[in-house]
Amino acid sequence: MVDRVLSEHSVISALRGYGERHRRGRIQAELLCAEVHVRAGEPQGLTLAHHAIKAVSTLRSTRVRRERLLPLATALEVRPGTEARELARTARQVAAGGTGDVVTHT
Image (tube, rainbow, N blue to C red; front, top):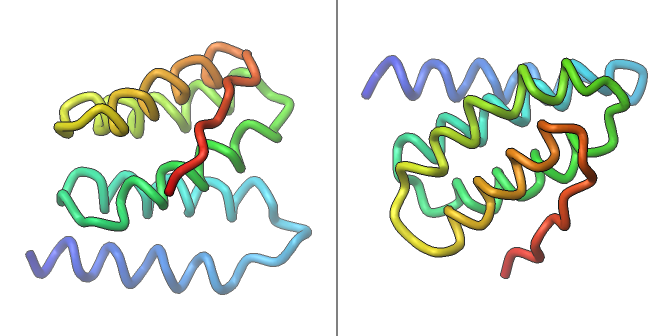
């Protein structure tokens, strides 16, 4: 629990430090934050995952998309619920180089 809290605080601090010039680093931090929340079963995990997938879909590099999205997709696949499975499918599509129809999260 303490490790997760420390990790989350580190990621949040990193997110605050990134400006528009460091878009890839900010997106990587968003993905990590979403993955931590999804794995912990936190309620906001799906919302964070949705935003992170949408952000990474704007990156041109398929390699970077794949490396960054697959851990989040795996975390989403083991989380119960239709929405988590749909987000996992979208993450895998984006990781494969597709645009993936990023579902609207309510």
